[in-house]
Image 1: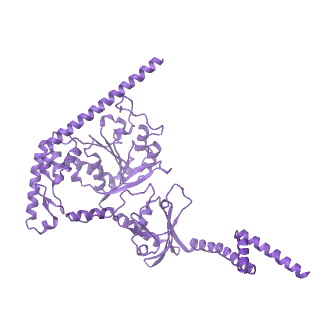
Image 2: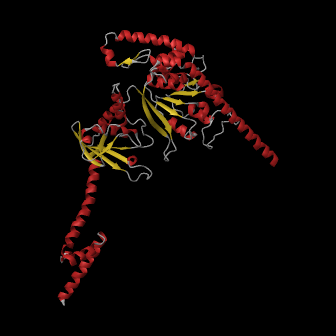
Length: 554
């Protein structure tokens, strides 16, 4: 009897153990029965051991997490970086150049290591320069292949990587934040962490400073262009870095030297550190506004980019005619501007914020077309010089129609200097011709017929300097002939430049093509005006029909 009770109690104990294991490992009892029937192995004797091992592992996992969290919190220093911050681009650009990244056996290949976040994505993408100067057909083909196949960059995959920096052991931890929006790609949910042992984060800050210097070194002699964005992916308004382009020389701006120097001197005086103190001592808002006006294609935006490059200032562009330009968004964007920058508001007359502008269909254009939140004139004025407006920035507005701007927008204090851009006259046409065809250092030296020798051959030629001087003199003479054939102030500099670019290696062909180009351009303008007139006529007839229908109904 006692033996029977002992067997019953052991059976109950085994059943309880099975129940516990089934709760922890679903299907374990079925597996146990299958093994016992198939291999005649009784695994029940190992159940206590399995329970002990499993419980120990479960306890150790929690203890290890506790120890690890305490170690990270009290014995290590860390910096955390997300993809929606420009620091991500800075750090990943540095990481891609390190040995531990290139030598890792678990890596992610990229042609562009920049953030894929919509707010930071760099449209340029490829920082490599094309140094191939071969002028043969094979050279051009090789150059095209090189351009189309971007250099691969390697970064560590998800997980933890160890590396040394200035004698310190550091950890690079790359994870995917699955708690962020499901509409984001995997790369947009990334988070990177760099940690060091010890409570002093100085080595991390030193690394970040080095990475930033490397990042900025790529932008030397370049103008950084940002564009205002917002209302996309439910993100708040922000500035998107669009591209870094080589700074434009002032010599390429087709304005009189007197006007260019006046603008340069005015901006230089404004951004001087002593000027800010002078404004503050006299209680004057530290702001400066410029208005560039004139027909399309006359160089208004070009002067803005040239100023940014000359003073090494980033340029921030807002399109007031875009759906993003609501009053709240524009105010937020202006509040995020750095202290020293250029803000460019292009084609301010087309933004629908002036009550003096009347649209071609006879309707006032100051009525917002996309909803009540569209930027109004009063809202724009408040952004430009209201209590919360940013100080220290250089504001540049451009317009094709000065007469359509509200006087409140151009009053002194908002616009401090106005610069007029006109259509191409004889001097401007000649300047464009010389700028296109005058040979620069390192270029192929073109002759009058558009043929030339390679830079290597010219360096070996003892008469290279004399030949270059002769070509430049020929170009100056041809520029006078070309300018004499261009009608005064009828075509914009951009149109004249477009003609020359069609024959950029043959100045004689450009001169010969002027008469035909003038005739064709005038015919195209006449056709365009006829289409616009016909469209306006149809709109007027439709309005009359609508009004007649309403009167009949009444």
